[in-house]
Image (cartoon, rainbow, N blue to C red):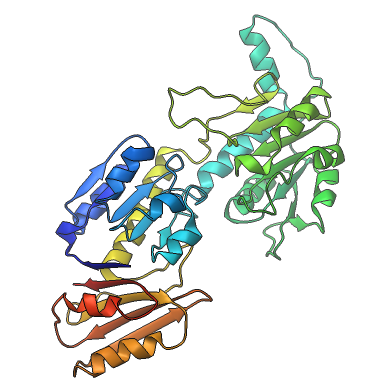
Amino acid sequence: MRNYSLDKSKIKVLLLEGIHENAELFFRENGYSDVECLNGALSGDELEKKLQITHIIGIRSRTELRRSLLLKTPKLFAIGCFSIGTNQVDIQDAKMLGIPVFNAPFSNTRSVAELVIAEIVMLMRGIPEKNALAHQKIWMKSFNNSVEIRGKTLGIIGYGHIGTQVAILAESMGMNIIYYDIEKKLSLGNSKPVASLNDLLKLADTVTVHVPLTDLTRKMISEKQIAVMKKGSCLINASRGDVLDYKSVAEGLRSKHLAGVAADVFPQEPASNDKPFVNDLQDFNNVILTPHIAGSTLEALANIGLEVAEKLVRYSDTGSTIGAVNFVEIALQANSSKQRFLHIHRNVPGVLGEINHYFSSRGINISAEYLQTDAEIGYVILETDTDLDPLVLKDLKNIPNTIRVRILY
């Protein structure tokens, strides 16, 4: 059980992993004076100690917030993933602790798409191998396995924000676009959907993967799928490391079934730049390996810093959960003329009635009330005409099935 009665000066914000200065600036401009920024990730006892006093945390991809740790965060009420993915957080467990998780699903889309286009050109021209040999003082001037991308077929697995951007850029360069997605999508330009993953793999000269990591997508490209791909085709992964079985990819390269591969994400990634990196693809000259930087441009980092900070401040100030990946959504403007309460509870019958009874039995008028539920939690925002003592939180949290209560000023 957690409860809060805090003004902004008492809310501790912790931003890790060199999050762009836009985030800190936005917090401070909105009255949050206790903001700590660290360039690196934290883990273990060091992270646990910090979270004992933290209310809002911002992370990128290296800091992991798992259930065992979340259970030890008595003050934490919001998490910001300054990235597209949220795999570094146990979001279901965070939800059941009343902690919404926010991310940035759009801000680095262009940066990832641009790198993928560059890799398509480089792989289909055989540049990685020629470059590696040139560094070894070997001159390999040859047009073998070097083709223009114009007129070739690009297969996109996952036709979401990034997949569609890749499609638009690739089509403008003359490529034919096919895509596979488990959900029906509106095709942009001349992109065409295919009925199955195998259909895409059979037709594409280059395959690029843009899906989240789920039970369905884990190792979705493995030995069987690579065997289906056209001989001499290329493969790009800028989604999640566990989506590809890199041992099978390495075998595809070794047998020359695959002409080239580009990978930006890996199942095991170093926690910092001074840690070693090991992967099955490091022995091949016709492979582009990048250290999870597809979305790491100055423009993307600046946009992400602002986007996620805005969502966190809006939630802290008003209770708005728009943009949360694990929470029911309510959007409200600030209302300084009223006292606003947030009540998060397990979605069982009778809780809302108990809340209303508490106020009505004390002669307190509820001027506005908003409720959203899903199968597991209910989220109530209510406003009163009367300014109440923060001690009321003690009573509200004693209502059965309450997860969290806060007063907003």
